[in-house]
Length: 286
Ligand SMILES: Cc1ncc(C[n+]2csc(CCOP(=O)(O)OP(=O)(O)O)c2C)c(N)n1
Ligand code: SF4
Image 1 (cartoon, rainbow, N blue to C red):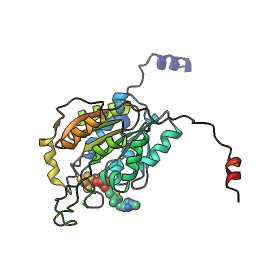
Image 2: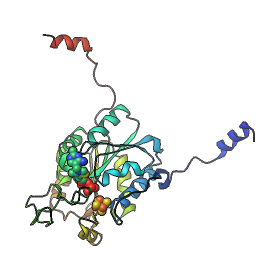
Image 3: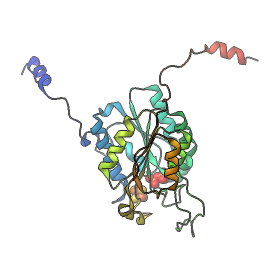
């Protein structure tokens, strides 16, 4: 074949199809057998295939935890950073490269304990990111300590009799802080979760997807989520107060897109005219 023949063949070939496999790296996940995070990884790859996003146009950013291993298992660009700082790193990536799709992934310990403050301000800023939290109500990687979403009476070797401390409510916090899209998903429904993630990516601004993802090792009873999760009986609302009232009073197991807002996302281009550095230095000169 001459180079011209090759050009002609390429022109005639259909555009490269994106399948979930396109986004799966050769690295083999080391999660415990049965961990919910396997299915979340699969949902992320299905969502990206549905959106037909070239892997090189997607960045997956995480902190530390079993769930935060996700970037290594994808073919997208990845950043596995420090514990609780994934949202800060992701915000920097999006501001520097607004044309990229930025997903942030991690656990409830990473996102709501050490990263709690960053979570509030990411919701407030409303930068166009998709934040996926695999919530198993425990620190899996460090062997079973209670997390902010752990039930107060969960009895374990590390917290005998339970912590007695009320659980954090991530969806209400997200709504109160300004997240522009709020959904709850369940890892046991990978197709439904993929659909929710795809909607979250498409929605402008800060999208928050809380995924119930069982830790079968330290919370084996979470296998029962399969029997108890159910589709939300209400349709999505655009009113944050209404959404907050609903999630404050629901059973914590209803699945679906619960809120879709219309706040203007944080502007990604340059803002205002930069002040020359010399001028600023002069102001602070002794
Ligand atoms: C600054 C810092 N503090 C504490 C740790 C220890 N640490 C690693 S992962 C983790 C919690 C992980 O829990 P979660 O985010 O819920 O993820 P999971 O492992 O359950 O997926 C902690 C406390 C750390 N790596 N760095
Ligand atoms: S410890 Fe829990 S969260 Fe971590 S891989 Fe095992 S099952 Fe998953």
